[in-house]
Image 1 (tube, rainbow, N blue to C red):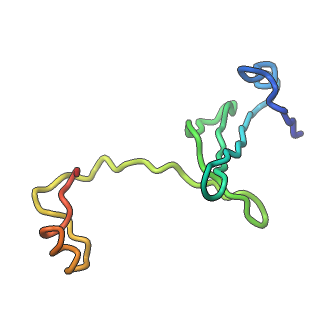
Image 2: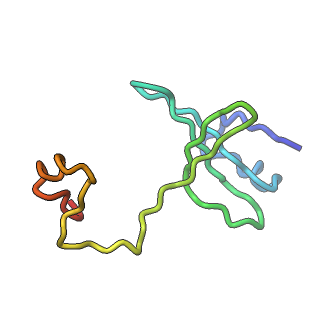
Length: 102
């Protein structure tokens, strides 16, 4: 069964959340330039640990493509050596490459 909410209440419908097994919020945000941004958020999903926060998505033929959140790596370590781009001319302009953490 699929329940749709028209989202007319101020702070969300707690009755809807208590009756349904899962609540998923789909939004389309207009922006001044370019395409509108579409995002999805799992509001509640009983018995499943969902990743919190918003995820961007695109509507494609056959369904939705949900893009994962970008999570910074915790294993990368800074170095005193500049980070090269692989383009020698650019690295030369940058004094050997980019500085870490800059």
